Image: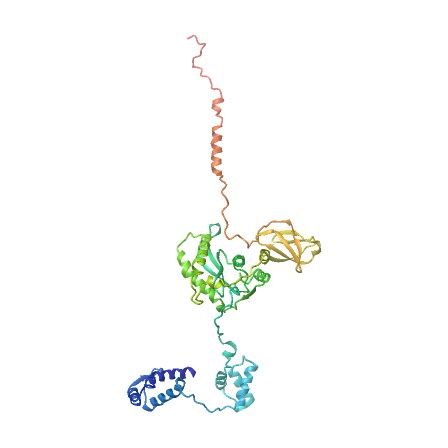
Length: 450
């Protein structure tokens, strides 16, 4: 109803705005009105209308007296056929159980009030006027306003994007995954890196680089994917005092800023490297760092009116100590101490304090070095576990991002074999040279007188 009245008022205003000019005399206004009365006018509803002189005069007087609002059609006030107390009872039934439909409430009222009960359509219209319709009360689409953090490092947003195919570890072709972390206030990319896999370990590497370079944020807003929902990430944030927040499933609106950055990354960076079939992952990251610092951070943002680096420069970051950072990114596993005062982890065995026998302890370790683990019980440290049997030095999920080829030994096995074979042939003894020849009976001798 409101939209119809608004549209009708706009149409009327378009017709009478010239005739309602206060600067016109009565004679001049009469000429304009007569021109309007003499022709057909297209209505927003699609039909052509022939207007009367009285209608035009009424609209002109209404606009000159009350402005645009006075041009809106008068909304009719119908006579209520349902008693106010019954409609109030319908509202109470809705508040009592918001999931009740209008038809269900009408059935309840019909059972309780008999012929005085309204129809289901009447109940629904009444709820709509009061803003209590079932869709609005329980499942209306949520409105999202424009949010922005008040200070840099107040909120970081992180997400992952699938990138191009590149040459990864071991010379294999892999799909590059870009982990990026964006500061909500300044739109600065605190860290970004292409990795060969979408894992928690890769995300931790990017996050640790961001923390070392830009300090500790108050909040970290992430997706619900497996790398972001891990216990390791939750522990790292808890140790550093970062509030970790996950977006609600099916509602990615809160990650709009970083999704916009990914679109910029595709249209300004990835488009420039398309077609490079032999691009190495390390080279891709080198080019990414150059583009972020030299192009993206120095370009004026359309939303803020400043470059990201200028907007971020007002920040006084809080940095963590190296020991605190190391503690945050230690992995944790729980194990029960055996009767032999040992614990096992990924096939490795470690000796621990005898007092921990039969207890479940926390093992903290660097995934890249399983030779050393720290043993804790109920928050108390019981020192390092003494290695008893080490069969694995690196966690299975802690493979290096780039596996360098082993250094060349300079040994050509086949050439050595060939050289030895040739030497053997040279030193080989010819038996025909050392075996005496059989004398020829017809050959002359020195004692032959002839």
